Image (cartoon, rainbow, N blue to C red; front, side, top):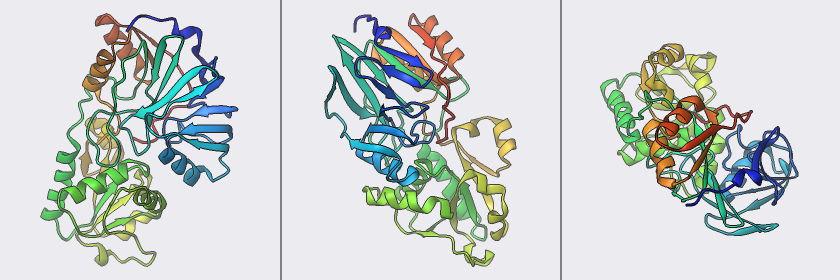
Length: 338
């Protein structure tokens, strides 16, 4: 597509990325009157906005996490549904990150910008696959924007988990996985690989997992870990918990557990040592280095804006490949879902 002066009407502010003719922010870091939210992770979806436009699934996630009064008004827009905001055409398309995650396609006066939010290109049975949209400006994350990050197929990593369960039938397998997206993906992949035993959940994962099931993602027999749980009750069991619970008092109820952590950061030995886990699982809900580069090039965008992550490496590589790129240095993004 042709080069366009998109930065005359879409630009960063201290509240977030602002589309001036529509008077709307995308994933704003502070409360604003009108916001478009790409997905439900807390570094993108915050409370206090006057009105929020998001996919119906993200609306439900935000209501669960922030409360029904987390915004003055929630408005759901299905993928591909076109909205007109003061002359700006807006539509949401799949980002492939977590359930309900979306890219925001903004078109004004013949110019098109795509704000991708967080995204991945790998298959995920718990969300709609990423949709590539050609554009003039592509706004990308850069969470794993270093050449070292090449994610393993998630199916293979879950296969390693199930193989360890088979080899160690006397040990609980305790998997740290973030509660929105990652935990449900691990569960669904285990089911797809033939694991049909009950999967036990830390209490912090129960409500979000129930929401996924209400929204059509079947996860099989999932049960909360009982308060009176005894170590012998969980010999050979698969238990999921928030990563923070791997080393706290809650985890001591399991005898001789195999501890695992599902994260793209498990590619790095230092991160494995820091997490102190026995079974690192390289499972990420973000694009890795090859997919970041491929996605940018496939959009055909003449101008690439990097919102957060390892922006310097990505900007350098894209410039080397003949693409104009710059870091927006937006504040408030912490990769909560990884």
